[in-house]
Length: 511
Ligand code: GLN
Image 1 (cartoon, rainbow, N blue to C red):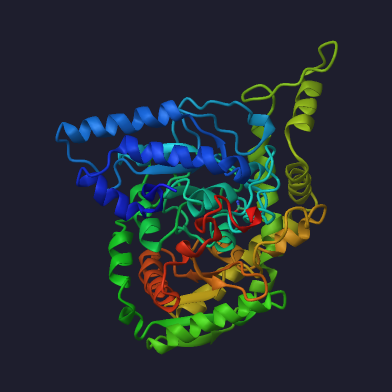
Image 2: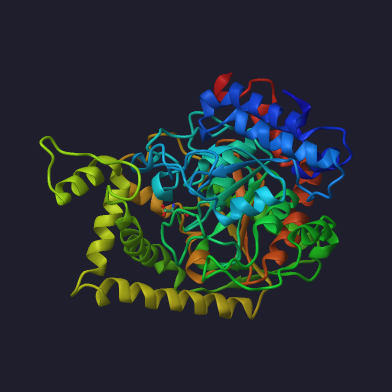
């Protein structure tokens, strides 16, 4: 395996700046890695070597001309297919958008390009970001790089595996109920869901607009922070994007690398997030990480959040309601697929046959649920009640943050499960997000980082940290401190322990 792909984004950017490596070499090394392993992992839906190399060449030329470039200029970036890009197709994992080319770049993508990052490919995802395993992709599942027979989590399994398997040092994702954090946990990588409105949603194919948030993925907390800094900020194209002077997340991560920064940090553990379904090996790693924090002088405080137990139920009314409205635009006229019945058909039959053929089962289930929840006579009972629960959850968080600086929980109650095992029972997928959904309902930031493997299956376990809205930097500071403690404990960074590094290109399932 080329040494270049094992560098963190921070290390690679230092070599690019020093002129030791060119952007073309960095792009080529990652494209070669994708060619070598992605046939088995399927983290990518689209790559375009010519487009990526042309973008890299342009960076090299600008550097050679003496232009002052951004810190990450020349670093490859994988982009979840939920974000529209002009240079490659954008499908959101759906057949209804097969081959769709956007006339513009999503703002997060445009910011990344302006910073000199090189689009290395579009990553696989559950159709319209609905799922927890990337098994709902219309283009087939992504495989976990730790064990190819396991799911990588979802909906952003492609972005998580892309960084975890060294196909890209950085990736963008979207998190509506956990789709950045939960795949990070299941693949042993790092992922952040920024404060709602922290990153523009313009050009992000909408799932549930009041919950969706674009965010960064990487192998280290610092790399995640570096990408966060690039994509954050106000955007006139997104009326919900915040006009806020964000501090540097990378500076916060760098200051956190010294674990003494944890002294006095008040860490809340929510009783209701330690649910019955938490796998023993996940619980053990979580408790161990609390002990590491306490040993550094952090204070662990038990928190009661009585309404969290209704979070999944409220989410699965609010999300389908908003999704049913957002997905109404796939009407066979404006985007993508059109199925014309034999003999021509009417406007209505073309529309319904297109939607029948273009949407998968989970998308149809949620459209039906959402349409029902919003229908006259049921609106108050379902959607209205769910919105009230949302307010109560926000109040639980406000009460918690009057006592603690951050909240910690396992990112997901389990490690990665075997592909195909949840088939036909969507509830099992839904419940895997019980720990991540509350942050989306409240609009607060969350970060997941690996804290070890579970003893029963040897698979990665993630720690989730949450902070009040606008306090994303606090997560990077604490996250980097915990990461350095885990590295010291294990004698190596967590990402270097993935079996994919030990010779076989795609993990122990190859052995
Ligand atoms: N797994 C959750 C769902 O299926 C979260 C999805 C997401 O964050 N996009 O809705």
